Image 1 (cartoon, rainbow, N blue to C red):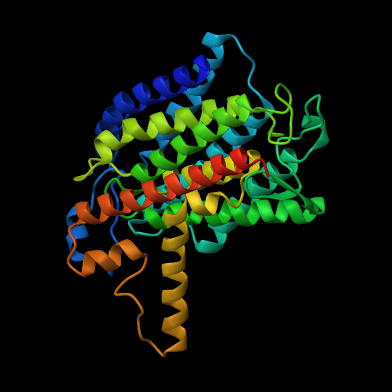
Image 2 (tube, one colour):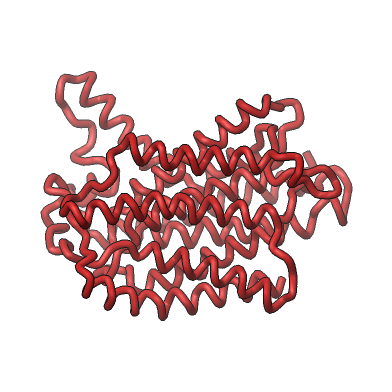
Length: 356
């Protein structure tokens, strides 16, 4: 447990202080955000705000995690290293996207195909390593499972390895792109991330306390390295807390795709590695809502010959155009996420209590 506290605390401190330094440097280097011309006009005042703040989040998490390992004199686990690989790898794809956007002076960086290729490569490498038998523990548990999972592995729903890796790809690319969609208002994605990653910290700690290697019984969890996953989740939570100090409205810095793809990927990785893949749909209910708003908007636009279902997608822009203040949208979306997290944790605990 000490490593969880150290990881979260160090990441928070580094992020809080490091973001202030990043604002100064990024402003000096001209790493300013370009704004969509078709977005709410109130956003035009944000043009030039430093972006790529996700770099600070990534560095804070990695340093916080390894500092916790050094202090507690414990070895990094295969699961945690895989999660960090996914986190940093997708962050690198996002960094390329942000950097190209800055150099080309446009709101979009990498072409959608190039971005998807980058996400796919990282996701497939992660997936292959996560089910590699060489990384199994002494109980035979690989970091990820080839079973479909909700609150734990569904034993009768085993998938061929190739199909399981394809499912991982869908979850990773879907969640990272969903986080990217949410990242459109000051503090929105950062606050949402704090709530969901904090929830996964609790899930991991509970899975460690009820792990089959030490407890046994019908309600135990067969998860490899749950406590070490909690260290990473706590570090991400802490890093987001520190970043939110500067990212809250009016934002002094944006995380950019560097941060949103990294955070979305880490969230998907936690769902896969904790055997709670479909629980993520409840904990991250806002991700589902935002993604559906884009899909329905596009589908309705094509089917109706140019009519719009929402004033603008993703959904947070729709409410802005209806007259809600930006901070009102952000806080209400935080509340929605809080309710989703409370529901997800309630379902997770109720299943353990019921013993089914």
